[in-house]
Image (cartoon, rainbow, N blue to C red; front, side, top):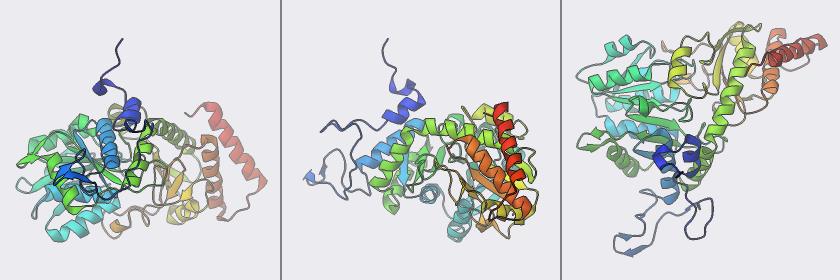
Length: 424
C-alpha cells in the first residue's frame, strides 16, 4: 500500500513533517536556524532560493509558516513577532478608515485595546455582541460599514462557545471577513477555516510554542479573493511593509513546539477535564466554566466543532467574591501566578486585573471573583490537590500556610474519591 499524499496525512504526521524537511546539505534531521539578516545574490536581483532579506523571507520562518498552513488547512500562513502584531497586521491589511468590526463581547483584553485605542483613532469603530446569539451578530452588522466579524471560541476568559458555522454563514451572506482567534483550541482541536472562516489568528506564544519560552503570533488564511488580489497577498504585503515579523530563533522554537502539539493538547484537555470535574461542588467554588462539562451551556456545540478534547483552559467563580479570588491565586503551589497560558506548566490568573484590565470601567469588565486556570501536563492528582489546598487556605483566611491536620485529611479523601471515580 502506498503512503498517503500530504493532503491525506494525519494531523500529527503533518505537525512533524510539514515544512520541516531534513537539511539537504548535511542531512540534519532538524532544519538549521537561519540566523541571518540578508542573503548573497548570484547577480543583481538574482536570488538563491528566493531569499533576499529576512524581513521579506527567511527559510526558518518559511518552514514554520508551511507547518501552520498545513495544520489549519489554510492556503498560506504568516508568522509575526507576537499575537497582537499578527492581529494588527491582519486588521490593517483589510480595514480602512470608516470601517466597522463586530466582535464577540467575551474576548481577549488586548484585542479590545487594539481596536479601541490603536485602530479607533484611525477611524475604525467596533460593536461588541454576545457571540453565542447569532441574532445579535446579525443586528450589529452595518450594511454600509461592517467589514470584519471577529470571534473567539472558546472565549477568553469565560469559555463561551459560539457557533462557528453560524458566524461563517452570516459573514458570507453579509460579505464580511470572518476572523477566528483559535489560540485556546489550537488546530489540534478545532479548524475554523474548514467551517467557513476566512482567516485564523494565533498567539503562537501559547499552545503552539507550548513551553513558555517564545513570543510570537500567526495569521492563517483561506484561499479567498480580497480587493484586487487575494487575502494572502494583502497580509503578505502588510507583513513585509510594516515588518513585525517573527525572528528565526522564535520561529524555530514555535516550529519545535508544533511537532508535539497534538500530544500536548490531548494531555492538557484530559487534565483540564479532570480538574473541572474535581472542583464541581467543592466548597468555595460557585461555578466551574469549562466546555467539557456536560453542564456547560455550550457543551454539545463544542463537542460538534472541537475534536479530541475541549482544551486546557478553565475558569472558576469563587463564592467568597473578589477577596477570595485574590487569596486563591496567591495560595497555589504548582499553579504559577501569570498572565499567559498554554505552556506545559500550570498557571493561574485573575483576569479582571491582569489580562482584561483594559475592560475595567466598561460594560464588559470581568468580574473580580473569576479565576482563570491554564492546566498544564503535570500529574492531574497533584494539580487537583494543589487547588484543593489553596481553597482550604482561602476558607481559613490564611493564604500563607499552616493547615490543620484534619483539613489535610479532608483534602486527601477528596482527591482519592475523585481518582477512584475516574475523572478523565
